[in-house]
Amino acid sequence: MKKVWMKPYACSLTLAAMFLGVPTLGRAQSMQQRIDHLNHCTDLMNQSTTLQADGQSVDEMIAYKKGTLTFDSEDLKSTMMRKVQALESENSVYDLDSLRKALLTRALGYVRKEEEECSDTDQNKSWRSQRLNQIGFLLRLLGQSEDAIPILRRCMELDPDFAPCPEQMGAAFLDLSRYPEAKEAFKKTIEIGGFSEWNADAITRARDSLGMMNQVERDHGQVPVNEEAKPTQHSFGTGFFVSSDGEILTNNHVVAGCRNLTIKGGLPVQVISRNPASDLALVKAEVEPDQIAVFRSGTSPKVGDTVVTFGFPLPGLLSSEGNVSTGVLSATTGLQNDIRFVQISAPVQPGNSGGPVFDTSGHVVGVVVAKLDALRVAQITGDVPQNVNFAVHWSEVRALLDEQGVKYKKLPSQQAISTSAIAKIGAEVSVTLDCTQ
Image 1: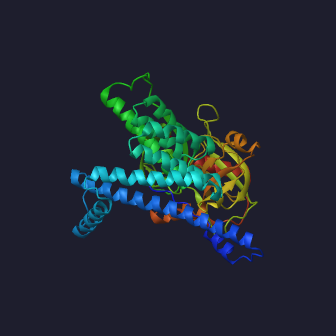
Image 2: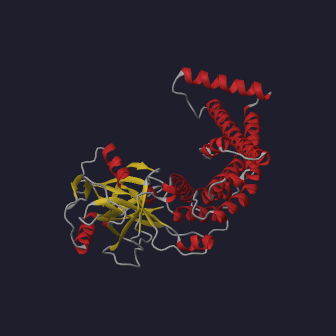
Image 3: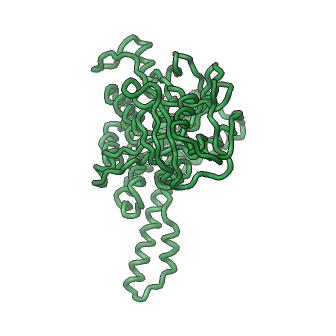
């Protein structure tokens, strides 16, 4: 089962309310009603979370009985057996499949009740998006994929930048053997971009699903019903050399689900490490690069500092020599203050993903990850955002390289160089990544 998205209810609001002065009895009653309502909503969420965790335990026991899952130790197996036996006794259900269905049905009931009664406690639309996605997911687990589709469609309309909903939509279509619609939903998921952990995970699943569908088509020598045969599909991204051993840094969503991955000249590369949470991936080519990137050490960049991006956007349309753009570091956090990312104003396009973000010394301070879809935001807010783009935070980038033992270069940024000089560095260290799906 997939992870349960838990909503961090504002406990501080409840505590503040309990200590606020209330001059009249009527106001005191109103405040108490508010506190009771928050507690009620928290209880609904906790009940659903517990039931889904219990359902996962039953799933694991079913897999063990089928021989598709083994436990690491006898103690772990005994603990799981005791837990499932207790669940059987509590629910007076002694068939594992029936027990699983009962637990998930009750969990679905609690999430639906939370959706009906607790939307007024949401601090932003992402909370409701997570809840709608959870309803769709539970419906799918219960074999009600047809019912999940309108719920997931509502989620996509509410929050077009929340990738788990189209990914779940694709899975629901796949359940129903509606293959063309499943493919479109998975492609839409990937197009959104992985600027949050939820999005990165959803993009990985969508790429894996597309890869699986393509493999089935190749194995059977046919395409699904109602879909004409298509040529091999390619997607592109940018990467850059970070060591003289041929290690290349890029985005996880650039490499996830690729059947074959190559750089210029058709040279194959191998995926060494992936971190979906920060949307980073490390790949390796059997080549010794002429130049490798240098990372900034010492003091961190500040909001307002100039940044320069380099990449290979819109291959086949824009210059194959690469594209350079300038902007500023707009914020040191990403969407909803996500500390894994930073916001930049330098324009980026499809294909820029995985490219380096340089400071004015030509030292790397981030990795391009996504752009905010201006048209989608305009549909929601009525205003068109200008140059709102995102990169992986320098601390996340350095952490991955350190964890993997990469021998990368780092220097303090003490002297500014021209943008043309930075563009030259970008062209020397960067490569186009061609993903065959």
